[in-house]
Image 1 (cartoon, rainbow, N blue to C red):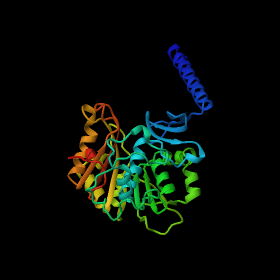
Image 2: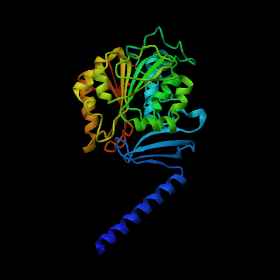
Image 3: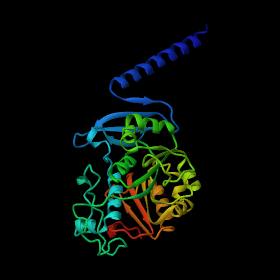
Image 4: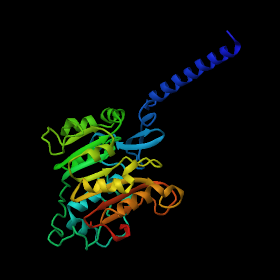
Length: 337
């Protein structure tokens, strides 16, 4: 055998041995590794949040995609701040009076005081909003109504927000569209989605069923491209959540005017569109946000933006975009002009 081939063979064997050893070490340290998915290698590992509470993280293709609590009593709660803002927006929509009373006189929300129950982000109050009528003012203090309606969530990941919706909103019917079956399988086995299905029921979805179809549960799982599903869907939703943004590669057409129009066409009259836009606010890395805002401003009557890092505008963050034909009880400082 030629010397060069011998060296190549030895190198390949050593590389394989190192790779196998690395896998063994990762497994012993509690790291789950899956090399193939539609978007690259997947790692799942446990850590703790700033308060020392155990959390589980999902990393896909070198980017963190999801985080959720591990403790049994917290598995359906929200660990991400931007998900807690999603929850607060739904609370505003369902309880305009109580939220207005609670938030009256408060300024910019305190990001460090959000609770694990998905509340406490306080992005209200605008007394002139369409959903801040005096008939509701204060009537639900201490007993806020949960949001209800048909929800479409594009992008499953660890299914953090869909789990919260199903667990905390008894009248919500939730359809989740995730393009990668590997991701959904990991969510079921390692992010307690199977526990949610057991506790609340779920229906294997298809691209032609509607959220109101009779089924044993309130959660439908659809394996499809989010944009394709939305275009081919013949039903309307009270909430559409775009949680599939990926930094420099946001969810294709949904950041365009065509995508925004498709979202609006599939929303009910007072429906709400929520999106997590991973982007900087200014500079070279702000393009995903600029395009998404421009598309929504040209399509919806009211658009709001809650930035993650307003004090660092050139740094990427999880920015919450809200769009609706309904004016919401959100502080005017978040309204996009």
